[in-house]
Length: 118
Image (cartoon, rainbow, N blue to C red; front, side):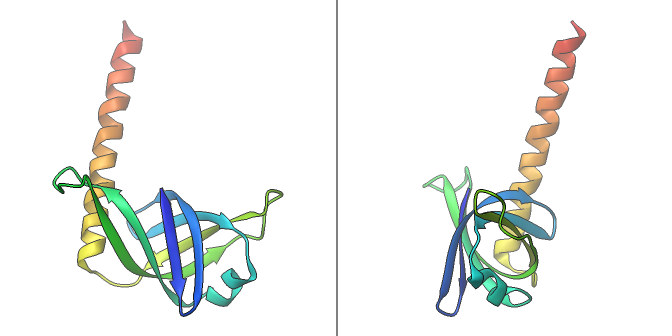
């Protein structure tokens, strides 16, 4: 899932690799701009699937803080972890998405385990 990261005139693009209750991990091309964003509040913008929306997705714009980043890997990418700043409507939509995904994963795991029993 693609994500755009904004701080003033700085802009990065990455891919979301993990969601949790209070944070998001992103893989992005390493840049010195990441170091200037560290410990600052940035805005991330991305789309999440939503069956209720006529377009099938909702665009979220969330204020977050970079709490961790790795140095560049051999491919020139790094991992950046963002912590949510505050409660807002975007976060509740994101939590609904995470909850729905968890339910889907549990159902799939149960289905696979039942299939293996036979």
